[in-house]
Image (cartoon, rainbow, N blue to C red; front, side, top):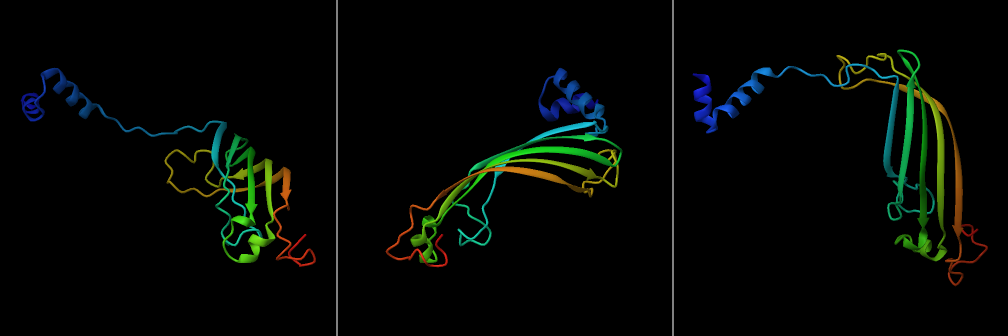
Length: 174
């Protein structure tokens, strides 16, 4: 019999063989997220990267990365539209003394730290509608637009300027 052959192949007792056989033949397809909830809640953790004139790297300053977090909620208002609110908190920093090239950045020595808090409200348009999870492909376009406001607490440090090399009247010195 099939059970006897299965027992010989896997060297297990008959109870384990019956359970294994039942699992093999009792599997049915399962789809995740077959219904759409009216609300979605999420959290994110990452970092904010400073891209500006106090760093020589064109893709940003990776030397002073600090953690950032974001939480949000969205509500489905219509099969194609949702309203989203997000709050983000993090900080940006740069320090020219840490830059190796060009040399004048070390002499100028400008640095800052900026604590950011952002609140954003946006509308999301999904052309495929609210049933985007059911019988859907992995890629679905959506469009979003909204408004945000930000609170910043900026701390400037100008005490590292080396006036032996840079005059206070040079264009790069504030």
